[in-house]
Length: 259
Image 1 (spheres, rainbow, N blue to C red):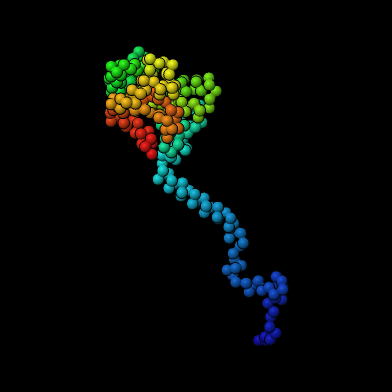
Image 2 (cartoon, rainbow, N blue to C red):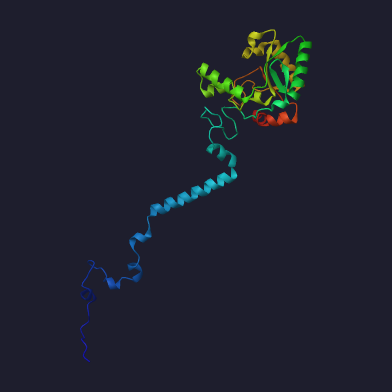
């Protein structure tokens, strides 16, 4: 058997060179040759995928910890015709939401005016006490349905060319009025009707009497000057808080006022 002592040059054997100093293909480790460049993936895509996963986990955590705010944010505006949505405390343009009183719970206190029975009883007693002191309190408004409040809000808003925020300073959007609960009443001075539903009512004998005696009958001023709800001062607007049910209805507003 004859062997050729001349060593074989691997470069000549393959006939290929990748460049000066490059290793022959056969000398490149298999692991490196078997890993295509494309299989490493785009690093930016990996980062975006990681960020998306983190955001998803954060969204799930917020939904579990703060379900109510998330629902409000995702929900449609609660009042047709208004783009505004309630804040985290439930207020819409400064007003808390209130359910409409059942008609069966309301009793008449004056012609065309009704209140919840407990509030009606105390209001009649208060009117009598004021009359005994020579003061004539007049009921201007009491229970109003949500439909009635809708007309009062939108119709007057249009007549006065007001924005929703401007209108809400003096009148609640439908579904957000204390009057719909059957526990709120607007009062005037029978001796000075020109002050009805006006800030000037605070200068009447009727208002002075209410300030001194209304709490005896469980009525409180809903919107005093500079109230935290941002509603205009209404010296004529009083709400009844003389039962556990009434206190529950106005609990959020009462707590907010004490902050």
